Length: 330
Image 1 (cartoon, helix red, strand yellow):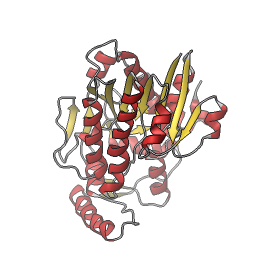
Image 2 (cartoon, helix red, strand yellow):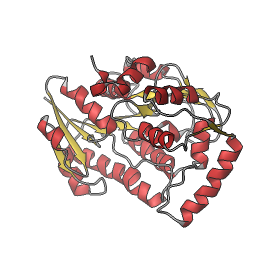
Image 3 (cartoon, one colour):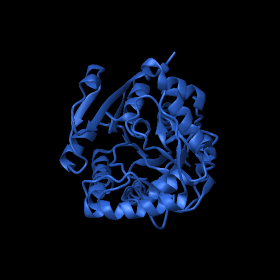
Image 4 (cartoon, helix red, strand yellow):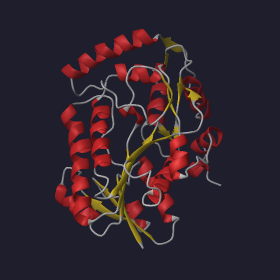
């Protein structure tokens, strides 16, 4: 029996991980999160309620566990450093200490390509890219710190970090809902010339990559202490991809366009407003302007080689599942 803990198991990626693990014989699943999930409990998933800032709760969560998927994080493009630090850095440090004390054997950390994204175009980026020297979000800054902690902890347990880019698919609670909300209210504008290429990660492929990493730890020595980009093999045109999703969901087409420099300047101005009025979430920031107008796509050659992982579900099938009942599974 392999006992697995998933932090953030009630979230988008966490739920897909649970579905994958339930299909494996002799796996016992436990989640750690801020509330109960009765639907997961009904499936036989054990839930430990707590906060990553609570070392005692984490100690209870990892007791008797063989492996951990650390998925939970505070995600966003605005907010104060302390809020992100407490969860993303402090929480990761607490979890690593609890794992060390409990003798956990493996830990797979969900990181982000934002740890290497600065203000320049990135095409076919690989794991040799350095960490970004200047981050435009405290999310990226704290994820850099947390990823470094995880990789440095290799040896206490076998650890690795995965960097899935723009996870999407059925059950999405972030990317697709934001597109829908903006499209429905006519606030979705194309930023830049519409030619930028991006990598995206269908959620089931991402979950498969996490399981592949778990299996590879302890088998392939190259995996322990390493980070991997996780996304579809080929980049997509950012705005073509967005328009395909809008059409599939019968949402209004994008009619407004904004030059990149104007969007970047507007984002800088709105960030000042957010600093003065923290409760306000600006619709544009410098980071968003960069994400929507610049190239950011990555090679998965290293993940294919070291993890033996191959994305199974392509963009066309992913969009079909996104709009079909029950995720469109056949």
